[in-house]
Length: 188
Image 1 (cartoon, helix red, strand yellow):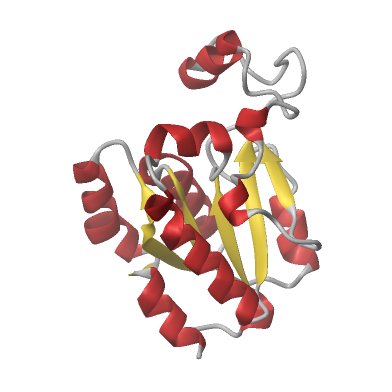
Image 2 (image 1 turned 135 degrees about the horizontal axis):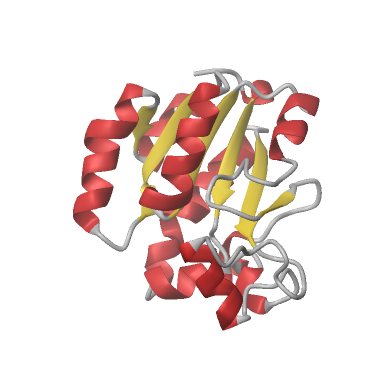
């Protein structure tokens, strides 16, 4: 594993409006909390990524099936409660909150600039959903030559079979895939 100085934990789309659709109790947040706590103990950069839009939703094209729907709902503006990071993993001082406008954490955000500025070469990914932000970010990060780790139990998807196929068959081609507990042991 790369050293903590050059590694960042990306906590992606773990925001109120998305968590409320996927997690029904406090226990569901435990893997995310454990990952964030382990990264902080190791002195690793923690970066939060959320999807949100400017007032009036100018970034949401009517041709984009997913985001046009969100624009119609009108509850995903940067100031809405739905787009704020879930309090169970609340960012601390110095932990960036990146706003993206598409599925990948890199799409329309300043993530890559922050990673370069901090000399980050290894990304540890967790988030909601496995088939959305995790998949899109993993693919783009692999193309950008980052070393990648995916925390399989700190990723959720509406379809458990899709999650299983991704973490067992697709992601291992480009990333190390492990549980939060397995990953935490590598930090000791």
